[in-house]
Image (cartoon, rainbow, N blue to C red; front, side, top):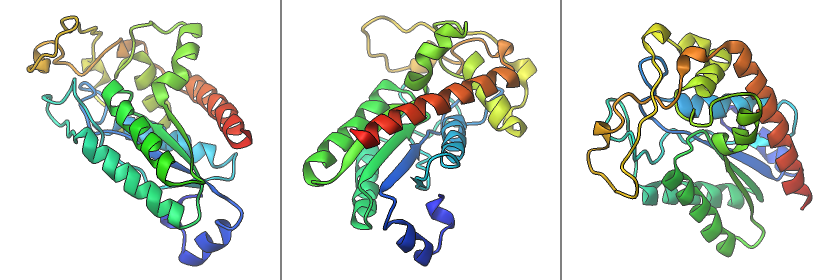
Length: 239
């Protein structure tokens, strides 16, 4: 149930019996020459739209922006501070809670470690202030990681490579372009160092091999994602 397309009356009736909402979060960042800047948003949002066809949940309007450290200097990337992301998410949760929702599923299509840490911190801090609030926080890569290895994807394939390009080919094929210009890349940052000019070590926005991507693989990944999410949500709601 898309909150953004409901009337006030529809929301008021549904919230009497449905107390769970998904908040999808993406990012605007470079994804090579072949994928749109909002890839992280498009993938998780499309997955969520499919999920609510199978489970009666509210789906909140998505947060397009995220914290992008490694790609922040690349053309098109729009990054926000972690504190901004946390504050925005916290405000949204408080507003939804005030409207009667109690179970919050925060799903990120962007898998940056620092980005996700701020999402978890938002949930942890809100847990202390909203006495009936319950939280599940996950990102698309973590949800898929075991399946990716089992299905034969390269362990280092993580960004705009085979699996993410496959998802886009299946979910939003009209937005995939110039795939013939994409290439395999596995950047290496200096270990333990916090480098200022990150684009010197990762200029492509690709981490993997998009040339191996197919729509069929994307469908398989979507099926696995939905199964994993339904299992985790069932455990969450029955805990």
